[in-house]
Image (tube, rainbow, N blue to C red; front, side, top):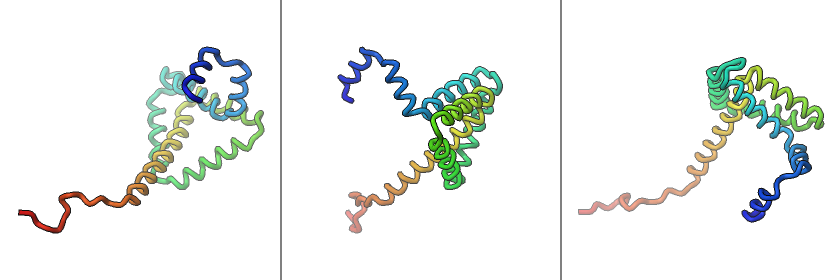
Length: 149
């Protein structure tokens, strides 16, 4: 979409049918966003557990993913492939369960997000290292073998 189409869409508004179609297509993502927002509110305002636990579990998840990237990545692929293979009704039940977990024990949900963050961080760092290794080193002007007087 170009900028003019986006501006027109904003002016027109979004219909209920468009929202329903988007939600059907992206059910897992919509429930994840809702759970993230609810978990952040629950943790921030100390409803059932405070932000300290949330920060601790995000950190533990990230560190675990950095130390054991292959194992954690395999686990996350199994979790998300299981979720995406389900029928829509089961997927909605799992999304509702995710929201309930985010309300009552948000640190568990944020620990999962820490695992995702750690695997993503590991992936992009490794990618950058590989790209850097594949670049040809440029000879700098001061690296010649001759001595200048």
